[in-house]
Image (cartoon, rainbow over the protein chains, first blue to last red):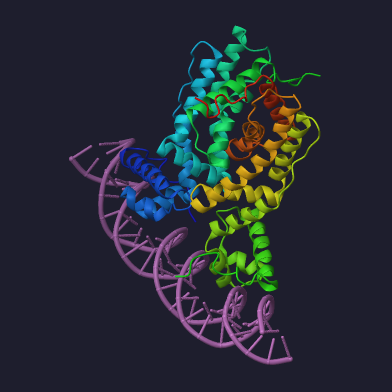
Length: 209
Length: 209
DNA sequence: ACTCTAACGGAACTCTCATCCCATTAGGGG
DNA sequence: CCCCTAATGGGATGAGAGTTCCGTTAGAGT
């Protein structure tokens, strides 16, 4: 039995291999938009990508493998965080970035598929965790700067603040399945910011006795 | 073609029918715990429930039908909200209720399956929305009482405050896939409460010009 | 108790999906 | 420019999920 993925496509990452990957990733997103993660079949993807189905099985192995690779690809596209000069602007930029991703047809479908996949596939779950760790880490930097500028209390946990801004938006998308609007983004920022200024995101004893 | 569900089991909801339903629901939860939504098969469920697979197909029609029924059942089990006398206690009770559900093997798996199902099945999505609308509505009442007691500003939106308490917990569970701890619950309550006291949950012009 | 029929269950059947074999194609180094 | 082999593609194969048929079982009303 070949190992499901990473065995092929690594030695000769040249023209054809890259082309096949691009076509398959693209077809995967299309299929996700149309049928969601459960309706995704390797067969469809192969046909849509104009690629032999053997190839899809050899390189990705399963549905979960496909969306995992898709997520890993998104992770590499470092959407660099804004630096508007004040924390409110930066948090709003973050919220807007999440909002756009959620409400974009292809990206939104991809995220939802990834979340669905992660509920039963460990590999997908890991990819999802890594993706958000990285994103959150990047944006946390803007919070640190705000602390240095004196806009927020010393010791404010950047990662937690960024999470607090995104959480209500994803909650609406995926749990209560309500539409996610610009107003939701604005409210989320306003609320997180009020709490942050009041010191509710200051971490206590970060390892110190 | 028989309509997939609700055609059987409604005219004679007596002993055997009820027994079959209980066995199937139980088997479904077991299967979800073991394999997640994606690994759920009608075949397995039927075998585990000691029930003919024809019956499972006739009454539930699909995986999504199974978890949807499961969710509808949970929705009827009205876990009545606490009334500790002050808003902090009530919000904490809510957060703890969510925390327990999330970290409970069977319930947690069921919620995750439901969320996964809802990403590609409209019926499941509707059931999920209804479930949370109801839960949030129930708990929003405690906020209204707190407003009457003068603990929170006039016009505070109860539903939004309850959502704000739960959101970070579900976000961790389902999006970033980090463990969800008691401390997360405490922090979520503290942050939401700070913002609420500062009036960040007051709705402006609720229908007025 | 008896009857009627809703609801269930076993088994055969079909079809889609995952896997495998082997011929073919096209990068990349010499 | 040629060769070597990584990588792809078509098609056969088998397993397993979903569907249907029809006989059997057991609530519910009388």
